[in-house]
Length: 248
Image: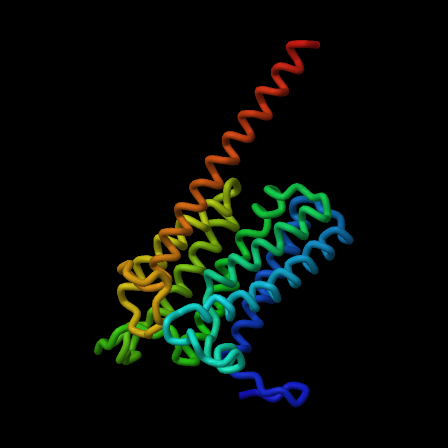
């Protein structure tokens, strides 16, 4: 534990804050590389900070509706809910979308520039999970690089995935980054859930799978609908422009 301004910071929180800082720094550098002027860069970084705070609240709120917490007093739910990535991602993205819209910036372009920082920040947060001992895997017994594991290190596996995905989005993939992130993370998360052993209650009663697996399926469906809707909208705009040019 580290004391900072009379506040105790756990290793988990330190890694989470480092993850946030890494995502913000990545955004700032990517905006600079895309030619955004300094003042606008700072405004968009501030927008992401506000969105991260909104996501933090949603990450806690999303766990209120799992079976293990329903019916408990509000303060007890807040204290024991912990944080989940999917609700936090949803809240953060919605907040960021609205702020960018109010700033009258190109939403798709800014989202594309912002996307690489997401898996990097998440990866550092998962290292914090490994240190704290949450989000753990099923019991096992094996050695890896001289380290004995009594449980499958699902946190470290997700951290490694996040770093690889960051490198791909940052240096290899330049277009449709949000879509690539959404699909790849949902598929990975669905698979890694088979190896986790921490009980997180239920999300949709009567449907097989963990809450994260159920949300991953919904995530893929919603992402696909959004992509198709954008494609139809782009085609519609292109048709309007063609008609306008023809009439001229």
